[in-house]
View 1 (cartoon, rainbow, N blue to C red):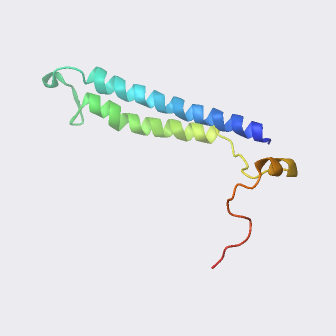
View 2 (cartoon, rainbow, N blue to C red; view 1 turned 90 degrees about the vertical axis):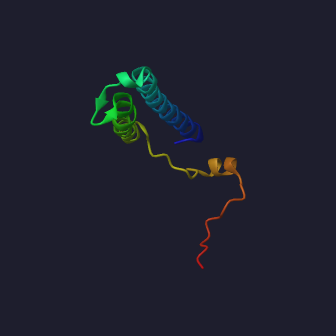
View 3 (tube, rainbow, N blue to C red; view 1 turned 45 degrees about the vertical axis):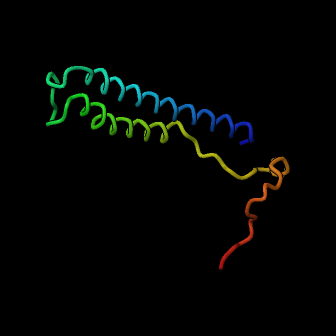
Length: 105
């Protein structure tokens, strides 16, 4: 996989993560302010919690967790972090980071 392909894949994965987060925020906002926007005396309750809280926080979290698991499991790819050939290694240059020597103490 070339450097360009790795960057494209990481950009795609970052956009997917942001999209899932935006979906979760929309879910939370809809139930938090849509269902919860009103007179507290008129709230419906689910298992002792106001419906807006139950659906936005208690139900939304497991749903988004399962969705994130599915996105990572099926849409993310393992990307090698090291250069595949000498040309890529030269392009990367020496960044001053740790070398490949053992630093055992």
